[in-house]
Length: 468
Image 1 (cartoon, rainbow, N blue to C red):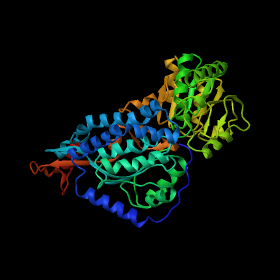
Image 2 (image 1 turned 135 degrees about the horizontal axis):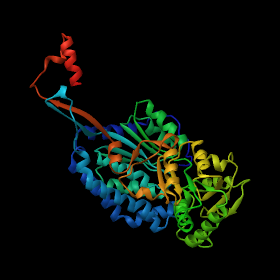
Image 3 (image 1 turned 135 degrees about the vertical axis):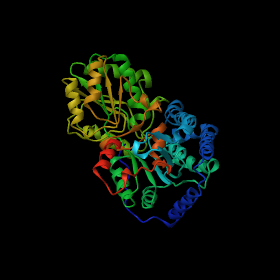
């Protein structure tokens, strides 16, 4: 994710302490533990989304210029699909998970029992202001937790509509929406939570983790970074360009798993550039500012940040801005210096650097010399080359011959590694993130073998060696 306003440590306000205490009281009452309560809340959230679809999509358009189709696929519809999957599998996820019991503990049975953590804090991000707030909340609900939701203050319209609708549909004794900026976020972080889930940038992620450490609170950090895309000359050029354009310029490039830069085998870069240009015109027209399917930059501050990346680099396509929207046209940069800002920082916008490399092995080395990315993409018609990339690189997720589509599979956990984040969610992974999977062994009083009790002997020791 891109950089966000810096938080600073403050003492929690009384109203937030009261809010947390009230939620903790609700949790301790046990009301959130039943399957019935969890399903009823998930159904309520589904109704919220369905009954207010028009207003929600309008808010997303106001904040980021998202088209109706993009907002539905990446946010509204994504959440409905997530709820459907969760409702289908929740009963199974809640069941004890049986494991074997060693002979020395017979008669007995061993299992793992998921239980809710308690009261959790979920801090959303501005680039997908609905999905990145409510998808973790779906997981927290499924696991039986109470929650405080903190929408991003930069996505004003979405924050407002979430704060308005949640109390109308959800059990307000178990959820609270807190709007505001860095002061409110800092105050919330100063409170004691049973888990903190944060989506955003690395700098603020460190602040979140530091605040959580005061209370030994576990955290999930979904951060981002520079997700690379490798293109081999054996690839299907037309489909590769189409899928890169789809993944890079969705939400005007403001996606944590968008391809951040392309590593392409030397001699093939111009063909790739020409194919991407052609596809950009096909998807967004000759003037993207006139396209209803092309999104805005969140604010002028970020637009100017993106402008700065173009200083001193070889722009081979695009680079125009519209301050009024604000927006920037899809932009291609060829072979920027490795130490340039555009190659050191997560771009988080509609600029795509194209970096020629001598070989796939050089591309692998290039990636491994940098912090581990949230996602990695590779395009090739050579399975051996693709397997080599998968085996020799480390990233949160890998997708071959496509971009971002892996997010549609709820069976695949989503999360980072190293600087790109820690922890994961989606599907059962999200349920487990917001659960404590408690170890249980149940024993009977029968067959209380004296072999494990003192006084010991060589004979007892020989038996223990066989039992253990």
